[in-house]
Image 1 (cartoon, helix red, strand yellow):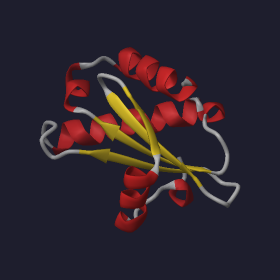
Image 2 (spheres, rainbow, N blue to C red):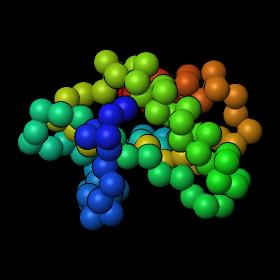
Image 3 (cartoon, rainbow, N blue to C red):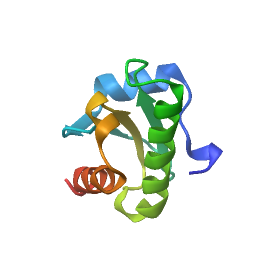
Amino acid sequence: MKRIETIKSQKIFNDIIKNGKYVKNNYLVIYNKEKEEETINYGIAISNKVGNAVIRNKLKRQVRFIIDQHRNLFKNKNNYIIMIRKSCQEAKFNDLEESLVSLLEK
């Protein structure tokens, strides 16, 4: 995931969460909202209640890697916010990858 593709603005984050569609499972919640540009933008959110900083950063790195591997499952002209849930802390990488891929296919 390149720096250009990330969403950092809190205003855009909140707009996608409030007005976008979402799908969820035990590990993740994915919000998406259409936009006019042809590019795809991503945001990753994780609560401070999920472990310490080391664990949170590890989970974010794993999600970014999965996004890079399965970039073809994302639709153009969409913004995506991926929220990582607390139950993801005990999950293995393969479980996390399967859950993200299954959510993207919905």
